[in-house]
Image 1: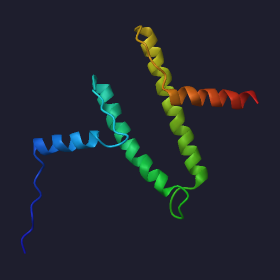
Image 2 (image 1 turned 90 degrees about the vertical axis):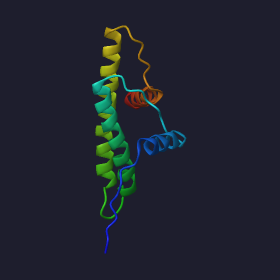
Image 3 (image 1 turned 90 degrees about the horizontal axis):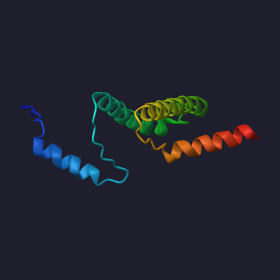
Image 4 (image 1 turned 180 degrees about the horizontal axis):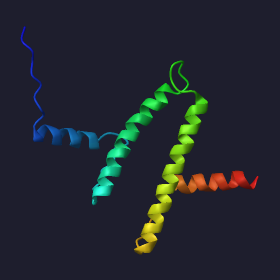
Length: 117
């Protein structure tokens, strides 16, 4: 019995795959300008895949309980908010305009309304 040896895709095949991925709904194209940005992008890509699996396992018998899921998401929001705050401080220091993402602004607004009640 002969085993097929898998060949690596060519540079052209990789580029074609990337072009096709850009056409998918929800796809984003990002030019990375720094080594730290590259690291963060790699983490973000893996987080996004893990989050997809997390959602599938949420509330399942051998998966993640809703209580644990809520705790994990609260922790994730804390990271996102802290990174947004850091980016705003860094941007202010170098006089670069940071636009707080709409989702964060809405979360802060909703959170403050909840605290006021």
